Image 1 (cartoon, rainbow, N blue to C red):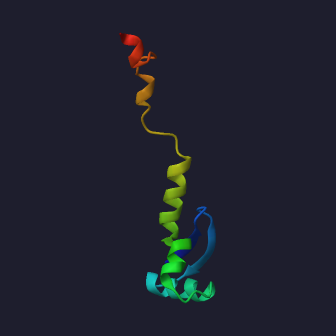
Image 2 (cartoon, rainbow, N blue to C red):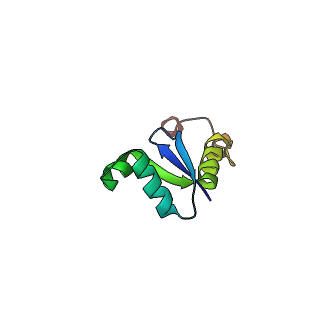
Image 3 (cartoon, one colour):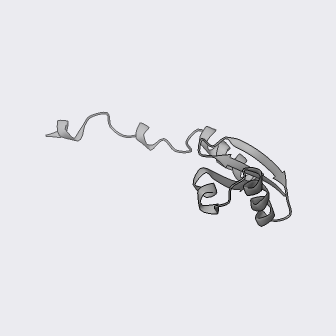
Length: 80
């Protein structure tokens, strides 16, 4: 399974083909030369390639409902 390393800007920093997430985690932590896992996870996330692509698609996709188009155009304060 392919895993991606994603930074806080949601950009892919690295990829690895690994059998488990723990081996992918060890690879990325070693590659970035972090000793402390907490510091590593404060800067990066490890996701499967599919999870990352679904997240990207969700940001690009048009909203499925636009309820605000059915609302009237006046402010509540104007009702009085």
